[in-house]
Picture (cartoon, rainbow, N blue to C red):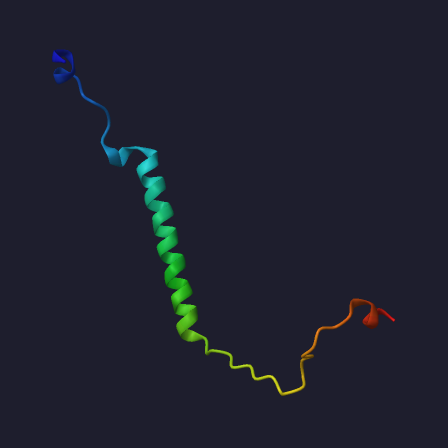
Length: 67
């Protein structure tokens, strides 16, 4: 233990690769989230109304449509 006190323990955290890599990943996710929110607020909701009778209501036989 006495030897360690005299030696430097390493470079500061900001000179290493991995902290910046993790910060970049987190920053990318924040930017992506902000872009998603901006698109959601900018684009109007689509209100699709289907007329009655436009879609089949009963189950179809697979063989009947192939004939």
